[in-house]
Length: 419
Image (cartoon, rainbow, N blue to C red; front, side, top):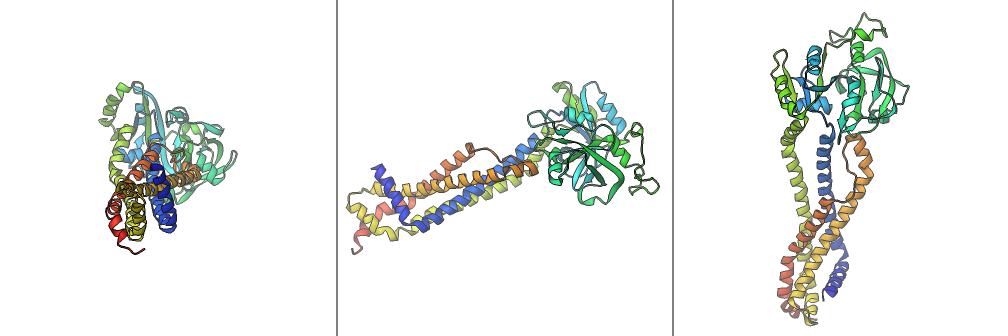
């Protein structure tokens, strides 16, 4: 009987093609929106979590932990102040420090941030699961006026090895002057990482100092001849923006952090990236919850279409129910028929929604990963299976009310109609 009921349910749905199609469409759109929000939400978390790894501390000027993390790692926001070069040297030479990578920010190139650093950046920076940076082409910079581009910078601006670029003073939209007379040769292009490294322009600290000679007042130099050759050995920076620190032993991290935070020579903040990320998720947790609630609400609205479609069609199907009863169908068979219809509508909408979402993710995955560092690739997983099961079950439950009404009134309503 179950097989015949299933066949009857599908034939009944096919007979009401327009209303059934609209109901399924509402479920498809709801499922696609829910999966899109979930994929982006988890992708953002994964992207942020994988941006930097194997770095024990980030040291910068005294300020908020989240702000220090954002501008030093994610290239978002602006630093509150710099820290002295002498302070960096003191940190780098501390007994518990295994390595230290200085970072200097403040310039840009066509909207992309410039990162002044040293060779240690390429040796010690890790992302994802402790993956090192790799050069897709060329080599690391060696001295002044050489630049290594992130993968997205090279791709978006169509740059290649041997080309020359010029840096601008300031960040993003506030860049108001070029460092004229200082053309940088592109000597390397990094392999894609899916992190802000792809959107960064890397030069040496000596290069940062060279292009800022004469800028002490904050305005372009007037007396210095363009392109004047400077001795890189004398271009030791007075200050830097932040320091990435690797500690020799994990048990020494907290002790070193406390020493840096209580250092009397300069107001410093030392943060652990993982802890700062946790604080960031707490801050934006309300927004995440709101997006999730909205997507769930859309799914609920889509699911109510099943209840509306079945309830609205009961009066039109009174003759059908009476004929079924007259041909031997029991009340529980009528009840099961409408439950099957509701569950079938929900399952069909969920399956189509999942498939369309996966196709959409596959189409845009590469572009989104390159531009925003979000991983939308991969086939259906646990989330999709849970969505399919939850939507199908919810459809069956929503069909219970019209099913109960149909099996209770089928015989009486059907016999009251003149054939």
